[in-house]
Length: 420
Ligand code: 7TS
Image 1: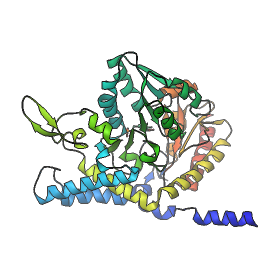
Image 2: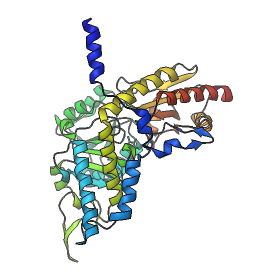
Image 3: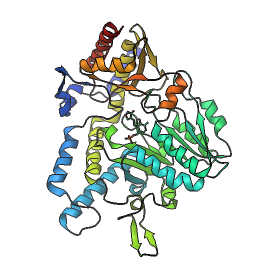
């Protein structure tokens, strides 16, 4: 009896989504692909946009377009206010202490490059080490390789276990007196593994080593609180959180951002310029050279507002349910092997089918209207570590349904018939 009551109480507090209703907010979900209803399961690559975002961008260009931080005229003031309101919204989304800890960039890639060049490069020397993991997206590998090549520092790598969980013991062992910086993904884009970044940050900070977290795959699925995490930097992309492409966020602790040199030079990042020398603007403007993606920031603000209205906990619970259902139903298909079965996962199901190349599988699924991604997912070192050339990857968003998982499963069965 008591147990029954507990379950009832749990259900009462569990947030739920009206998925059918919210699907109506996404115009693209109504379109057909090759005569079939679109089943969009490539959300880790990019998410679709709700009308709130599309309309906000249209309205901005139709009514308020001007450059920011420069004009005294009405439109410039409106554009500036919209852009800065977006910064406030992002700060709240990440629970940053201050708005000025939010730098607008093109996306996670640019955020990481900024930290690599402005924070990593000046503090790395020959004999120093930079620590990443083998499950990083290329955008959290290549910028560090470039900095290591320029400074003579060594790039060290934390391995993964066969199930896609990070080897946390190896992580502890690789943190050394030589380590100057850790860069780690919050959620793996290829496997969906959620890394224990709080613990990892704590371990690094125990040795005074700063940590950058690549949150590109976490921000859409997991509630992120940078103050609770204590991370030094956090990066994510607007287009993966139902916002536009070409806008992203770098969160950095104020003391770091203030101490860092600018990444690019140009307009807006200066206070005074003479031919001899330039005084830089305060943060975050010091890092936002040139006309920024104003419409993108305003669109991102609408996306984060939309996501928060729906409720991030409710979205996470819904995606968890879809992932569990897909794990069970896809995993049952003969010849299919799931790749990445970590205990903590978010929204991503990677798999391979015996005797079938993932690209062929993806092509058959596309004929059924089912969009998934196949390939190395910009995580070639991880694929090498797992001994795989490629996987098929279904990734879920707030608007996906169990019926769409069924369509994926049917499509895979069809691929078996056609390709085997
Ligand atoms: N970090 C992670 C973990 C990612 O998944 C991606 C993009 C990036 C960084 C780069 O983000 P961008 O917006 O700057 O390009 N990941 C993927 C993917 O999994 N499929 O397409 C893009």
